Length: 108
Image (cartoon, rainbow, N blue to C red; front, side, top):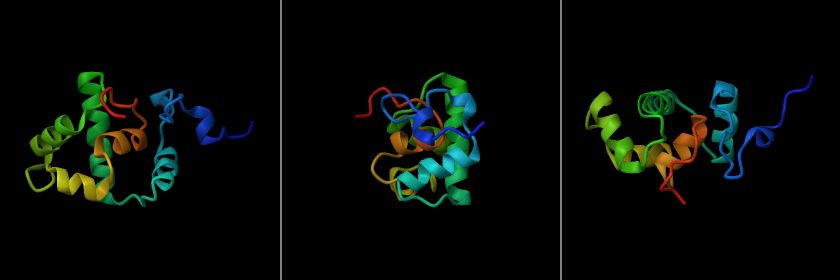
């Protein structure tokens, strides 16, 4: 059996349809589509995104992500500029996609 192509695993919005199939390999593939090379700092936020989803059964909006990161990692990392440096454009949308989560409800 061959490994399915990444886009075969996605919903109509390009997000992983079943978050249980997420892996570091899938995250790396999604990141590459965004021209992001994942570092330890990225993984730290990706794990927090998945923890947020586990806690609230929803992907965070940008403001909720900033507050969640601030609460768990402090103000130095829990701010929009830091998160934008890791996940340009929309940290919540880009980060959620790489983390294998559904598209945040309020993201375009």
